[in-house]
Image (cartoon, rainbow, N blue to C red):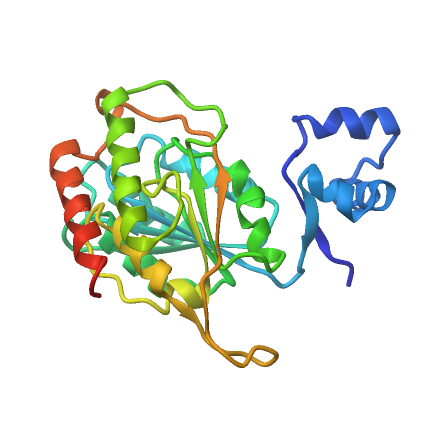
Amino acid sequence: MEPNYGAACMPGEGADGIFDSLGAPENEPERRDWLMRVLGESLARRIGVYRIPDDLVLSVVIPVYNEVKFLHVIVDKVREVPIRKQIILVDDYSTDGTRDLLKTWCETQPDLTIRFHEKNQGKGAALRTGFAHATGDIVLVQDADLEYDPAEYLDLIEPIIEGKADVVFGSRFIGEKHRVLNYWHSVANKGLTLLSNWFTNLNLTDMEVCYKIFRREVIQGITLKSDRFGFEPEVTAKIARFKMPAVPGRNSERKCRIYEIPVSYNGRDFSEGKKIRPLKDGSQALWCILRYAFAD
């Protein structure tokens, strides 16, 4: 069976002009295959076209809390990404109608894996539930709001598919478009990232970013404890220490290889439903950086 191809430029974006002007086939998989043949793999990879194994599955874990207004939009956007997917939604005891919507989806949307918490526990707890149910080769964290764009998945998973990385972090601070919002919020994010880097010896630019992508054996191979937004510094610290086990052809353990990929960001402000609480959650993140720097 011929391999599938992933493309960062999808229909409606810059690739169409290339395809149309050169008279490429109409069918999308054929267009990707044609582009690989015409340009060669090296050049095609530079514009975001690369081989995706036919049997690869991406598990997308979406923690959900009071997102009834936009939940169907983000799920549709995830479905549109041209790769085999397991979509996992974990409701953290929503009270705005989200829970009722998801219960109807249990009966009508068989492609979704849906789990419910019986009390509100926080993003970290919802992610733990989602990770436990992930069966794909790669596991990706997606927020339920519209701040991050699933159209960027193929860029984000490329280093893992090509064997260069075990974990990929997105970054809102290395060149992509973003909505202009709160200055002090960005200062806090960068400050927490800097402090995290001191203890982990990483050189990340955006530790607090939503988009974190893992080989499944990595995220299921660590024990997570933080219930709320402490998930971000905790998982970063534990990934920095995690050792990939020996496998045939590699007789010893090695540290995780971590990549960073720029992502766009359409941030919300608090009047639009942003849920992070700067003082409380920032203090918790600071505590988690210090706690997990030294112990699990």
